[in-house]
Image 1: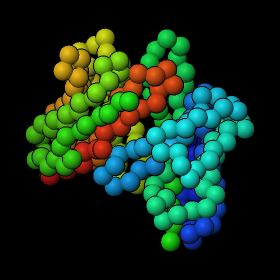
Image 2: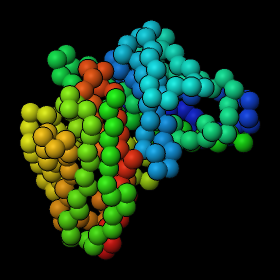
Image 3: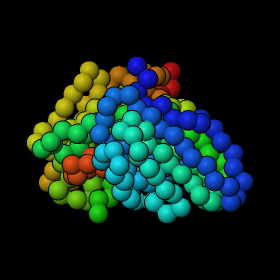
Image 4: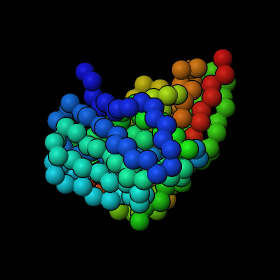
Length: 116
Length: 112
């Protein structure tokens, strides 16, 4: 009953450092997403994946890279962290239903990242 | 691209009263409109959704209405309880990938 699991839960980085956020889902979902949540800004899509080995840019992709080598995992990388990347990051996954627009997205509990 | 506006940004009601949150969208091709509830320190969780071929959907104390002509949809919570206090997000999409465009959220406070 794990659903979507994000690690780590909290992280503090110095400007210029790199890190990888891990998202794992056990629901066999095809689609996975990375969002960032900032006060007053709602949730904004960074990158997403429609299947193993595929990735695509979302609304705010600059400064981030992603990889989906396994269906159940979706990694978000920051190569050179900047204070503007201080945010709460959420991963989500959803299943694919042919012919129907829109799928229920299941979210993880989030990773709170501070870049000093 | 799609743009979703959500109002109000904060809403305070007395326990037992009703709460209404409204969203408008810009893309007439959008066909799926979910509502998510986010409790403090947690990720968003779907509470109700509606598709463009339906005008209204109800689940116990919550309901969603959709006006395709005016391009707006609303969340209605009746008989509010303190545990309804949270941030609520509306969203819209038309893509098969399910890429959601979220509103900026409404912080609902229910006072006992």
